[in-house]
Length: 479
Image (tube, rainbow, N blue to C red; front, side, top):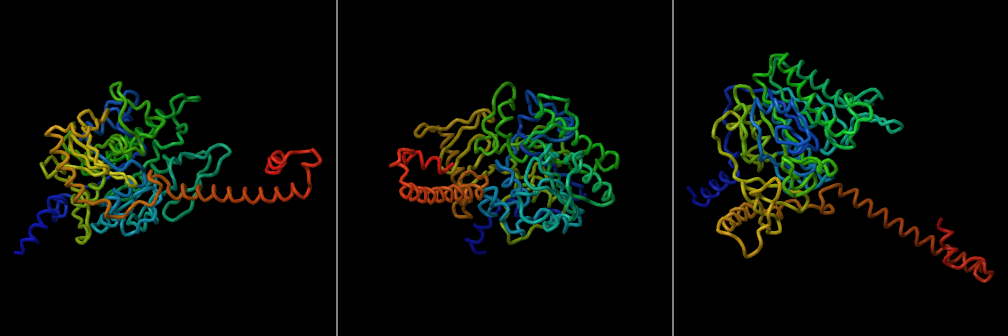
């Protein structure tokens, strides 16, 4: 055999171990993938939150495995792109919020892959950051709304719109979007209880603007807490429905956050009295570190806490392996299946995770992090602090970590992939550019107005009459 070919094959297996053919599972489980919005680890009781109460999610964790090192992109669009594609941003183009909508539809492989494996598929909830419609991405049953934080119509505000299976609908003033989503999700479970199903449940909670829930007391001073509690209640109702339909034993429920806590609530999202490093939109630890729980009765170890590294690209190959689905052989996938570990087997856990937002990125292993600037961080006290290792002060352990992580980045080569064309933050690049255009147009219009007023001032000879100075005339003319 050609030695160069053999070396490349071995390297590919090491860097992308999921590329090996997945084994056919003995039993195909139903899978419910719950994606909470802007919910960081500091907002979940079983992660040690000082303020959040989540008894139903805690109960789910007690019945399965809670992960302490699950990572995703730090903003909702790029995060969802990782889940749907199994590929990093420099491959699929999801470097910022607006770029996510411009990804080719064929990048969205999750729904189509599972549908091809014989599964009934549904996508309920937030979709606006992704291209096309859910049914174009392999989801037969869907409800979607654009943007984020769609809870209910605000008094005197716009009427919120959403789309369900092709029908354009409007929220009435008495309706609550999370309840509508929940009802459609429950209807999907009932309809498909006799065959395998996959439910992608992308929740509204707890994205801003935070509004009162149906359970909020009048004048509540803790609306964020109210929303966490309502989300927790919906998770409990979903599990109860699985029990009632006698589907719980063969259903894997995965609960995960889409990114860290948003800026406002992050100040109160402490653990053990300590603030967390980073938040939504940040490349610090808790921008991308999220809560994740997996529960499959009789399969996932109950009550286990795992520090195994997970990143969001892992969902597609993991679900595909559990379902006996095949991924396209010519496409490079970055995800690593953790299907064996979900079932209490050793498997081959990944040794690092990669995180990117715009032109910022890092690769992270258990105790160290290296970013695109070549900065090495000691993560021994994460998620509370991360210590920059000063140049020239590296210990042997730090030097070895730098070599390992630099080799991973060299292999991935993010700079050689699709580059970010936004403003560098990963947020709405198009809006930033439009704002700049508007500002330039306003400045141009002002310049024209000034010229016209200058000509009028000279023509009227107002200054000679002693009525107004030139500056006073120009100021009044622009009002």
